[in-house]
Length: 325
Image (cartoon, rainbow, N blue to C red; front, top):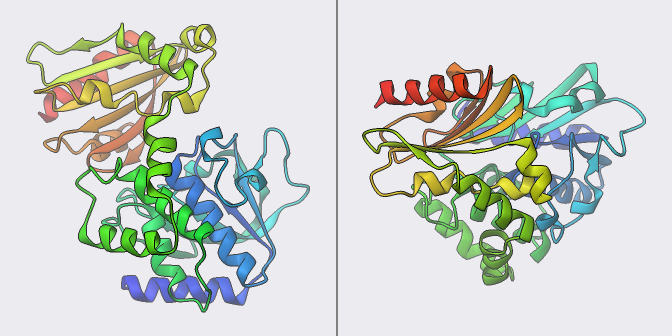
């Protein structure tokens, strides 16, 4: 078992010894996934390495200010022309989270796996996993410090973005003294904290507001008031003109109700499946719960896909949460 410092050193050697990398993050990337992707890209560019940044789907429009975010290929629109045998996975809690980008890995590909999820199954050739890190961006801050590169506002903004979004604006329990110390250094590099908070935490699109309204109309609570949930269907998405990124943060509304221990957001995928996003006040380990359904995440924030009809899925997931409580 390697120490964290040893793992960082292994990652540094992996990056220095090879070239021509494919950088991937998880499907439906959030702030930490996108910022981690471009942070690794920035580092490789400083080192004169060749690299391609790829995701299974589009990058959220609200992330378009990040360094080279527009260079992250959406394989559904612009697939790579070949396969790669040097892969850097960031913020992917398990190997399945790379999604369909796997088809661009060679059979003998070696993988550098950098992640902060406690459910990560160490699928890499080299693994840098720190489950008490607030974000993968926090690990990348430590990794970049190992290299003789000069920080600039572009990479500092990327790392700050990952920390800001995965700590809920520095409000969640993962906002450690290390996080605040790191943030202080990033601000010193010229990061515009108020701009990022407004852009990433406050600003909403009109479709986002409309789909939130739809979701809140479905708000349901358990008899004891400890579990609350909302639902969004494909028809709701079409009617509101919403896209996946417009759903971010909806799960917090049921969770924020006084007395609620677990909030759940059910996004219906089709007649036979839904995705459940779970948020916990702390008394339920939703990562373990999600993992029992084949998902994963953190103790207080996790998700999973569940097969079946919506009514059965809600009954099963809510029932499991009640039993945990």
